[in-house]
Image 1 (cartoon, rainbow, N blue to C red):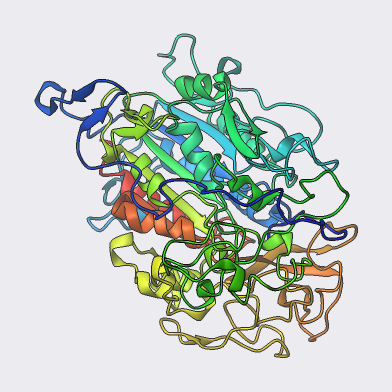
Image 2: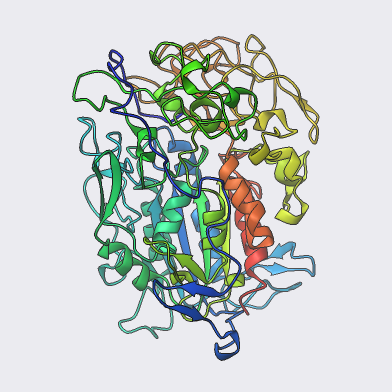
Amino acid sequence: MRRGFLVSGSVAAAALAGSLVALLGACDGRSFIPSSLVVDAGTDVVEVDADAAPPPIEQATKVDVLLVVDNSRNTDVAHQTLAETVPYLIDRLLNPACVNGLGSVLGQPSSPTGACAVGVRDFAPVTDLHLGMITTSLGGHGADLCSPANPAFQPTQNDAAHLVTRTAVGAGSVPTYQGKGFLAWDPAGVNVPPGDSSAASLTGNFVEMVKGAGEQGCGFESQLESVYRFLVDPDPYAAVAVLGGKVVAQGTDATVLQNRADFLRPDSALVILLLTDENDCSTRESGQFFLAGQASSLDGSMGAFHLPRARVECASNPNDPCCASCAQVTPAGCSPTQVDPVCQLPPSDGADDPINLRCFDQKRRFGIDFLYPVDRYVDGLTKTLVPDRAGNLVANPLFRGNRSPALVMFSAIVGVPWQDLAKDPKSLASGFAPPSEIDWDLVLGDPANGVAPTDPFMIESIAPRAGTNPRAGIALAPPDAAYNASAINGHERVIPGQDDLQYACIYPRQAPKACANAACECDGTSIATNPICQTSDGSYGPVQQYARALPGIRELQVIRGLGDRAVAGSVCAPITVGTQEPTFGYKATVDATLRALRQRIP
């Protein structure tokens, strides 16, 4: 569910002010970047001489860690769990563990200069470390939701991929290196001016950053585009405006460019660590794609805006050439829209277009995919050339200084049962498997061709699902099942408003949370049959017992595309109390990330 969007009102007299136009040339999901190293720079063609470039940097002594935190509603458990995992992450970087030849942890010296009693250091202690954080909130992409055009707008709904330093309480800011928005570990004082030499201070400040992310962000989370905007986009816009019914990017965001230049060294190993409990909703900032996030009518009336329906072909095959919006021009060779049986239905009254599900199953439901192709993000983290705003290929800022793609690691803690990712589906003690060992048919299927995952818990669905996780042997349970009938997601639920999705997994809160005034998800008509609102005696009430996650399909597609330069972890931590436990919180994701990193730092 795209949390935080409670929209009501009558249907606008016209669903659109005019017809939807062709929204973008490259809507087929193909790679944004051709494999050729020939750049069309307008009037000139520049051929890149690969022999003239210095060899790429394959190892680094510097490490830059960028947290990307979902700050939408009801993420407090994930934030707390991450905050309690951060000390483990920093400690493992500053005082690496002793490991055997398989990378299994055997112990840890008392200090970074101590010797291993058994085994060898995972890698040399990191003495040059940057720590920064951005959120998943990029505003409305031109729509009224998550923008100042909405009366309920909060500034934290558009963090614009700027480094975030707010504290958990009050209006304060976490102190950062020279006020630049990130923390710098510099125990030897080699930086000018010197960075932090207190591990306790460094850790405490980073924990405070995580807690300060808050839960007032945009419910249309742009997890992947936030990463791209901060690290890759050659010309991040300063603002977007709707002119003539289309989004136009305006100006250049100097803050993003400065944050990037200050935080990201050209010769560092980069670790991107994403935390989210929902699927990515990175909406394209061009044409009329903004309509995916539009809540109010476009004609100035007080009615609600609803997207037009999709042509009849979309229901059976979203890849059909005739699949399009009923408001678009009839595709060539297809029956006229004027006789399409779906397009002849009355305009939507909102029942089939709840605002919370605007990013769900878009092509089948609306005939248009409003989101950037996943290839954009795989390419952005691996290729030296990326398109600028005009479509010309230019140098990728991420590889400034000849950083090798091997020095860029992407770890994502997302909505997926941990049993699907663990080396042993019965226990997380052995850790998460690398992408090369993950059964991608299990967790993804083939999204581009409409093939569902073989794990039914990973199928995005409003209606209750059925089936058994083939790896763990755990079955889905019906909505009327007993408390925790399924060890993965409790059980399915009845969704009265048809405005949310079934859970991929649930996990225990550190403590139950009483719900009032939309403070959490057990505060309305959705309580009955909702497993996160159920107590051990089988009753339901306005007290949230568990946190939940929806299938993180697009984030996992990026991990599959990156291969073993990436790490997949589950936001549904099996243990959220007892930080010393080896499988507490997100330690398993940290361990897997460090296993990938150890190949790239001495």
